[in-house]
Amino acid sequence: MKLTGKAWKFGDGISTDHIAPGRLFHLRSNLPELAKHVLEDARADFAPNVKPGDFVVGGRNFGQGSSREHAPTIIKMAGVSAVLAKSVARIFYRNAINVGLPVIIMDTDRISEGDQIEVDLAEGVVLNRTQGTTHAIPPLPLTMRKILSDGGLVEHIKKHGGKLGLD
Image (cartoon, rainbow, N blue to C red; front, side):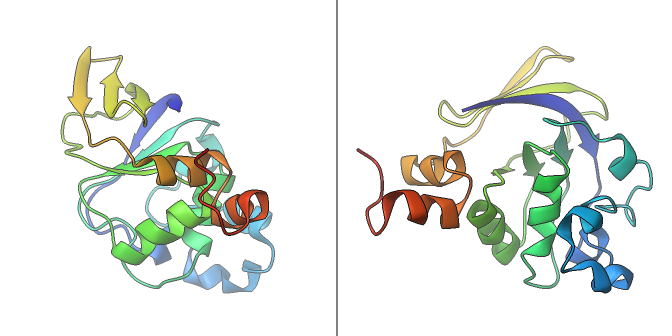
């Protein structure tokens, strides 16, 4: 699984309320509309300008706050290929994998706004094409890569039932 796109930088402590603004709670039953507002409380320029394949690059404790699946779901719906962050809230991480959004824990200090990034989830490599640097990351386990390639946990279960689907 290779992902490519542009880096959008965010700082530390990006909460689920930054991702899915609480004032728009009435849109939780209309996720495509809510996705038009993803991360607008952290960066007003993000939602209207993000392109399919781009990356959200965060600092520490990305996705802190509530356990709503809406946050990673609308990030994925906006076309983001993965979240790269120094650390993420445990429930955000699990929800992201469940909805098919890869999350990569790594030192993001050497990624700048607008850098062109390529991520190989199987090999465990993040290539910063703009800066010409390579960063090793732990490869995602095969089971997790399979869940992601199937589009998330629900689709994985529909496809494989109770089996892991590794054959």
